[in-house]
Image (cartoon, rainbow, N blue to C red; front, side, top):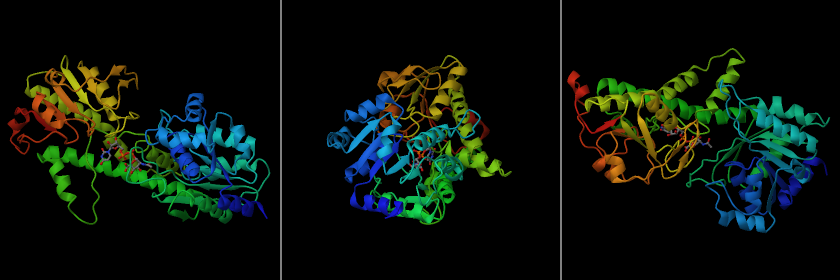
Length: 448
Ligand code: SAJ
């Protein structure tokens, strides 16, 4: 039996040991899926705290409950370590490490390189290695393959290498690991065959493609598609403002088109660990072949301008009350990057807070998912959403429309609202009045 047949047999018999490098919001759900399918999972993470929590059956990932994790740890089907050495006994290794951007907007693949180097030290012989981290086309072949080949073995015969983009969406409940189709590209046909066999254990629909680079490009298209369309709808919001139109009415009506349209909504900017970052991996790669990815650059320009635009709206709204931003009390509702999660990474709320503070505003925030805000030089604590807190603000700014907020309370108590998410009930705010004086007309709720 050759190494491929041996690996396929172990996967088929449920005997394959599954190594997962990076036990974060991607790696942990994947580890749980394999453990629940009866496989022995070896999780590796650089964080001793995360490893200790996992081995105590405690989850730090919102989508993985202790009640699900603890029994798997108790049965010995899932164990974690900071030592890559445990991967010596793994038959499969899935790399789920972060791929952030540097301050220069260039890709930071140092986590991928570190994982590949450590796997090479353990030895890839007989193993299937799969990269899941979102990265530019060519990473698997140019960065990982040479490090694993260092042992003088042949890919597709002695070890197997594939790329399969993660599609874990924190907070989503309508799709699971099992029901989310998974794109897979292999370095060789044998690599693809082993990777499809592996993921078929935990994914209903594996989607094979022709190469690792094709699979890397698929993921970047998915998230660039979102970034560009969010940029488009944000620019439509600016256009509607110039034309005195209600962008929310326009988008809702366009969304009635049953085909050929996909609804996106304007907002205060684009946050999270995917959409603001992933497209820059693609535009960076294209620069290396002397091509400018114009849509990506333009979308980033529009989206990153939105916090400034929101603060301009706050200034306009306060101005109609004959107030300046300087010295005004501004209450931000929601600082997480999207509704109903507690993640503040790249959240536009951070920019809005800094911009308001730079102009002399006294800023506070309320976010039931974020008790303490300590990102990007901020050190704030969430206030409770009380009538007093609302009435005490000169302006309330809706940045993240968590379902937990009582929007009728906001509408009733806040003296002035800048609503970037169309969350506050309407009050006929005379938005469609094109007369020049309309700009100074007093209204309580200002929308994007
Ligand atoms: N946003 C808008 N308008 C929109 C949609 C999003 O302003 O119409 C903003 C959000 O407020 C947020 C940012 O863009 O700040 C990103 O939002 P997102 O809905 O894209 O959420 P993410 O960043 O969690 O994206 C993830 C991605 N999942 C994976 O990469 C596996 C993305 O591919 C998913 O499509 C997305 O979740 C999703 O649909 O929820």
